[in-house]
Image (cartoon, rainbow, N blue to C red):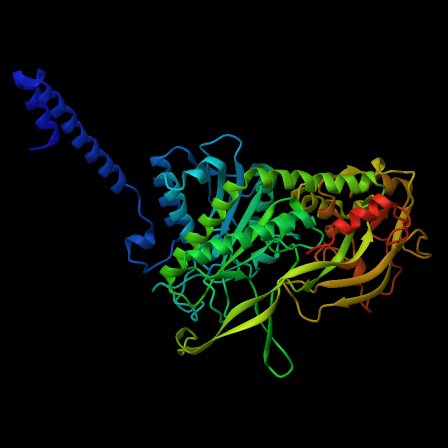
Length: 575
């Protein structure tokens, strides 16, 4: 007899006024409530890989179907599209993102990116499980303190192009995984500064619209042999606020300790370093350039985390590793919400204080430096014909110096701003504005300061293309003296019609690294101004006027720093 029939029969009995009967009513109602609760629990949607026993990873449509089912379960999950952002990739693949509202007031905002490389699928699949966990009421402290936006299939082109031939060295689902790059052959994780793809323009629009306090980018390693289930890296971009970067690193070190107690070894992303005799002599990190999704946040005053799952673990294990680690990161942010907010506000203030002191300074580059000594497992693997690890010949523990931090090098005084030739305005304005930079007409430039011209002292034009570009590294300095001979001159009209991009603005760091010709990740480096800076022997006419001018005086160290700015400089030394 069903629970509903039992209730009807009970109330038909004349003895239901007795105490025993009243208690029976509550007991029966309890049965009904439990039935409803069990039904609700079992009705939660399942991911594609759960349904088929991990035989396939999720397509763009699979993720959309699963998240739509979650949205029907709980209206706090909604689809998300930043204003003025592309809705699709260049090939028409949908850029589908979702926003999970917090249950508390004034939450910390976190953006979680996954699937930027189509073969690194664990983050994309783990994010579906994480959102379901949070909607089911797990980790209430995260729901109360954190608001999340996620785009699980960021490289939507590659997500829908799986093949068993891709990344055969990692244990994959039977149907395979996608390729690394997008349909144009571009690595989306090298595009944050030049912003030539629809995916990157979507992400930059997200920064302006959502304004995340932290950004996670979920990956899988590419072949190093070590004992860590997860390796990670904080946002180490050249010129980021040192104190904010220090907090970023402390977050990851704290989470490392937490995960170790749970049986999950994690450490800073990197590889073993070898000496001239091919002996391991250290562990070192890789990049500090802001063109990476996980490094760029520090130039937007946000925390950043690169998450790298160990490639040789089984597909299901890699999903679960991502799942557990991202939850641990979110839990740390929930517990330190106010500290993160305060440090971000202080970073804004420190940048503004430099200008109030009369001079702002930034490094042109960074160098790797030792952070600590750590005990590493060195694995000597046994691999099959596809390169997958099927066993270990040995595993040796070694105490090694760990070079996973960066220090600022070649710190210089920066100009008040830059002028961009009006001939380049249509080409460069959309990129600069997509980063959130304030752009003024040239007529608004500070006219009490001199124009500065760039004098080149060295160059290196790449011999091979990277991202379809022969990149250009320049050395040189700014001087007040105008070049003696040019085909076109900077007239007063041209100066007034130019784009004026102040460095003395909240995102001035970004302006500097995008527009200074010496920047290792700027628009000159990425070839946007090759017609001027990379002229070959076949161009014998008069050199056109310089397309970028600086506004300021005594740049590149000529300023005499007062005591306050000397203190500020000391405080900016990176760990």
